[in-house]
Image (cartoon, rainbow, N blue to C red; front, side, top):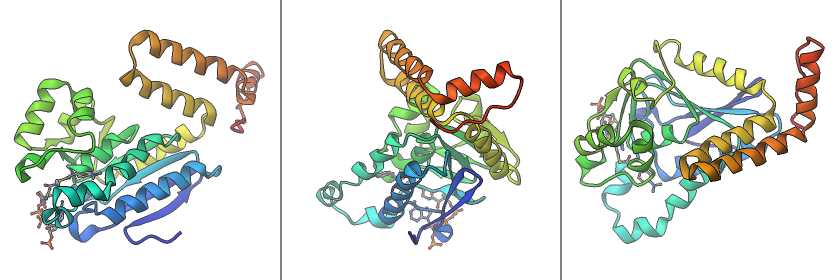
Length: 257
Ligand code: DAK
């Protein structure tokens, strides 16, 4: 597949997607989001890929939705675009998604980051939801995922002022996993991606889904969900291999079966 606004590569078993509209800080136009979701779904189906990494460039992960596309559109036109349906497909990706973010991570860019399972940030990252300054509000999870991640008071402050927070502050609030120098953020994210990619793929996917359920389900239902996943993995070849390798004091060879 050839794309206009993203580039795609593979490093060992990590699929790398780079947002590529550098002149306007990777603003997310409709086509970019279509391309991104299509590629995420393709990588999710590709057995050669075990983990997906999404990044931008040092200056910007993404400075939000493309304001040029929104400025003149009526509410009905935006509703008819049904772009949320495309966006929502991101949450169905079963492989882990790692975000490597730097520079501006704003609006839809912050919402995209929050769709990632693990986030490595450069120390230059500025993360926020500035929609209020445009007279609107987040529409792709900014009030919901941000509140779950940082708590009600911090989310209120960020959403009502529109001011971004630094990478360091984002880390203190648990919004990103790690903050590293700008020269290192991509390599650090790749290193982490490769580490996860070495784990048994079925366990990785079942754990990912189970962790997400923790955000949606009451505790007992979440525990029941977890237990079903636990039994399911006991039936896998990789479970036999993992335990056998431990007993034989050797490295396991996971196949994803
Ligand atoms: N859209 C379009 N162009 C943008 C842009 C954006 N979001 N952000 C930056 N640019 C462009 C600028 O217009 C400028 O273009 P030229 O003038 O060079 O042609 C170029 O990128 C460089 O920007 P600046 O000259 O402004 O650079 P500065 O360093 O001075 O400022 C900045 C950087 C990031 C602080 C500033 O550009 C800025 O405030 N940008 C807007 C940030 C923002 O408000 N973002 C939130 C947008 S609303 C949805 C999903 C998500 C959303 C909506 C729907 N669906 C699934 C349907 C999300 C909504 C949003 O994100």
